[in-house]
Amino acid sequence: MAITALPPDTDADIARVTETLAMITPRWNVRILLALSGPPQRYTELAAKVPWLQNGHLHPKLKSLCDAGLVERTEHTARHVTYGHTERGVALLPVLPMIVTWAEEHLERTDRPLPAIEQIEDSLTLLTRRHAAAILWVLKTREEVSGRALARIVMPSSDWTNVYPPLRQLVADGLVDTEGTGQPYRLSAAGDGLGPVLGALSAWSAGQPLNHAGQHPVWGHPQAKPAPRPWVSSQSRPALTTLPQARTGESSPAWHNRDLFSHATPARPQAAVPVGGPRR
Image (cartoon, rainbow, N blue to C red):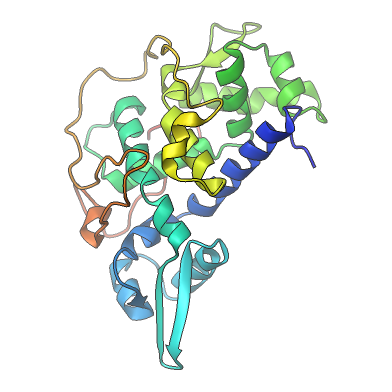
């Protein structure tokens, strides 16, 4: 069943990307995927790498990642069970440094350098806002769209005014721009800069190699970037060295547990960015 008034292929593309984001965005999922890098591990070995997860919380997370096809559970004997990435899970990992690259360029700066894992989690939170993927797709293809026209495309079976809450959130997040009430909406520099990430997620979710991202009908043909938003600080932040900046088509990076935190290791990591802005 169509979820938007977009062409069926585009509608299916958005649905697949949205589903992919729903797999990896829940709290701790990316950290668990990174901790599983390397040879398959026993539950106790993995638990030692994610000590902030309370007793009983790791198992349901692993089960959900297994159900999503990103992690596999292998029962060697009744007392010897290991967990490791599936081929699909390994194929998804190179998208993570691409997200870090985008975050370094576009997310609002904080008073401290953020570990790469926090930048990934914050970025994923922005992308999983309700209707975010569909809105970004439409604005990329149409450049400028009124709120009413956008509503007819993104949520054709709903009251058109329902488009404004997600639109206001995306404006607050810095992914969408508008000149004010009654004016059309367009992608910001940050929203347009998501092209490589969304193209790669689209390729992966369709079962294609990540180097097919450049052929994406929407995100594969970059256009001139809009003027930068004022909230993006011009002050540069030291480049991360622990997360390789993988590009589409390259092999999966060699993730290590120490890569989880590139600057600091808090006793209990902070939650992803709260609603209302791209940075706390």
